[in-house]
Amino acid sequence: MGRSSTHSHQLTETSNTMNTRKLSLTLVLLSTLFSASPLLASGEHPLSEGVVKKIVPATKKITIKHGPIENLDMPPMSMVFGVSELSLLDGVSEGDNVKFLAVDKNGKLFIEEIEKQQ
Image 1 (spheres, rainbow, N blue to C red):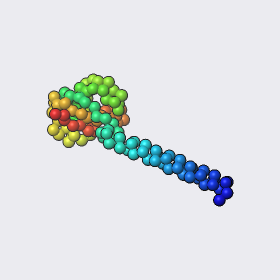
Image 2 (image 1 turned 90 degrees about the vertical axis):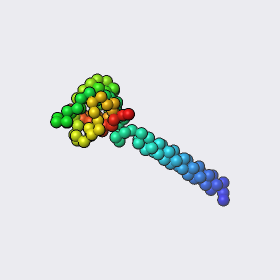
Image 3 (image 1 turned 45 degrees about the vertical axis):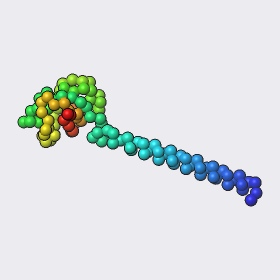
Image 4 (image 1 turned 30 degrees about the vertical axis):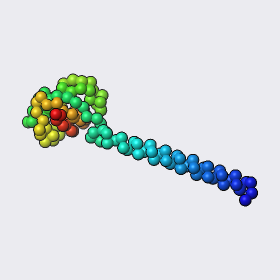
């Protein structure tokens, strides 16, 4: 092998090593991204906390005095939310501490997930 051939072989090995490192780094970053996603409830949003003040099953409404609602960029307050499925309120009573996911559907706020806290 001549000097040029040896140099070319070394460059190819260096290039392959760099490509392997880039691929490894990419895989590590992707696995970190996907392993972190289950930490968020309901797919993509953290649950908010609050206290149930009133439940009106006939109108599918619940009033919650809540802390900040991050996914809606909302400060703490008391407000009325709709529920699309009345069954979401099974086991939840006035005075209960809850964690919940509120969403904006065409300008109206709905609870999509709610769980009573001990």
